[in-house]
Every structure is written in structure tokens, then in C-alpha cells.
Image: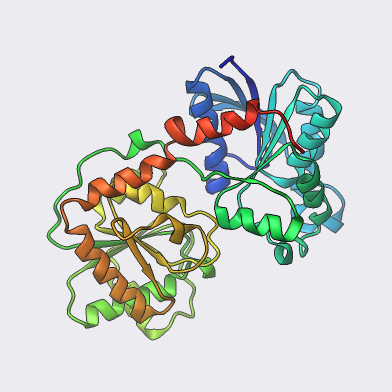
Length: 367
């Protein structure tokens, strides 16, 4: 395979924002560069500057805004216009966008310059009821129509896109660098339930987790809980959730470099969130040899958990508590850590996810 000139774009980037999409951009860029491709990342920031993240050069454009009708998405729409100038006139083989307006700019560029392949990864759920509520819906429709290759993070997201927008896509999950999560799991006297997610975002269901943890403690089970994520728990927690919060062993925001060790130290990872498109923390947990508990629904996390690598729970505190007990028993089995790591290997950047994306980069467009 010849070396490609790849430009990755996303309106936000490290170190300012550290969510899933930003991580996707930086870790994909590093993996592509390890494979010998020439990669640059273009993002935005309060001031224009240049930096290097994970060994990949990043150009930060000064963040702009467009007229008010785009509301809180005005900086994203402006970023799409900015990238037309920053990328559209430069030498580039592949433009891989991870936010909506820069994806529209990539699609336009690939139409004007047929030698440029345009790729878009949708980091959320491309469902019409949500997308049509956003003021940039027309831009998303243009992307769905014109982008060379559309990537969704799960088969369920791909199904939604096909049903709501008539666009076929490639279900390719987010990746993990398995090397970062290697290492033996320690033996703990008291098992640990790890909740890795926002403490203030309702859909992460921290309250349900804390109620489940309180039920375990009230039932005489000796288990610790670590809460690791940004934000503060909401003030109107139930009495049971407040008891669980008071008993939680750790409440903190961990740097991404600390997470592999926290996953290894934990006995079970618990991700009871709603509307999770993929569930990268589940793969990271498995890569560390730690099984996970997720909600039993059609979304991404449930598709990542099998009977040897975790438990799917119904959406109640009582059911979640029972599922945590089942997962603790699973974690005690000698083969579980190995099976978890085997499951995570399907999402390793270098050996699995990046090769799939490179196949799209080099394929002929069928749109």
C-alpha cells in the first residue's frame, strides 16, 4: 500500500475537549502514522496555533461563529467553511471528517477534485427525530447524500441511517490501543465496581447505579464503588442514591493516561447509560481483562458484551444490582480476563480498525 496524505478534521480537539470523537481523531491519526501514512489533523480553538498530539501535527484554526440561526452549532458550521480554505486547496488524498459541517466541506471538495476521497464518521446516532431538531439538519442531509463513504460506529447506527436517510454505511467501531491496556490484574480483597462516565449527564444513569450500589450494601455485600468522570452528581438524587454516593470509594476525574490502570484495578465496569452509540469504555475495560455490565437494549454497548465478557441488565436499580453480582462471579473465573482481552482485540487500532478504514480510503466511490 502506498503512503497516503490523510487529513482528519473535527471541530474540537485535545487538550480543550476530551470526549469520544476527539479521542477517535487523535488515536486514528497516530495509528495511520504508525502505518507510514502522512497525517495531519485540523481542528479549532479559541486562538490559532499549532501543536503535536500523539506524534501527529495538529493545526488549530481560530474558532469562529456564523449567524445566530445555527445557535450552539454556529461554531461547527463556521468550522466547515474554514476547512474549505484550509484543506480544499491543499494536496490531499483522503479527507476524513468527524463533525458535520467539515464533512459537508469534504464531500464538496471530493466532487470538485475527484482525486480526493471524502469519508465521514458519525460519532452519534443518525436518527431523524434527533437530526431534524438541529438547525444544521440540511447540512447533515447533504453529507448523507454526497459523502464518498459514510462510517457509523455500530450496526444499529448503520440501520438507523439506512431507514431514516436511505444511505448505506459501513459499521466500523471506534478503536483502542491494546498495548496501553496490557498488564496483569491485581488480586483485591474487596471487589470494585467502576462507573466510568459523566457524573452530571442524566443519560449516564449515575443515580440508578448508586441505588444499585446501595442495594448491594444493604444486602450485606462487601464491595467498593469508584466513580470516575467529569462533572458533579445532580443535587436531586434519591435517598438511596445519596447513601450510595456517600459510600462510594472514589469520586474523581481521571486523566486518560490513568484509565488503563483503573480498569485493571476494577473488578467489574458498569456502564448503565442510555443511547450510547458504541460504548468505548466497555472495550477498554475488556482490553484490561475486566468484564462489564451494560443495559440490555439495541444500542452499541449491549452488542459488545457476551456471556463470557459481561452481563446485560434490565433498566432498574434492582436488576442492575443483581447483574453486578453476576458479573462479580464472572470476574472470579480464571478464564474471564483472557476472554475479555480476546473480545477487545477485534477493536485494536493497528490490527483491525485502521485496516478497515484504509480499505475505504483506497476503494472506488460507489456513491
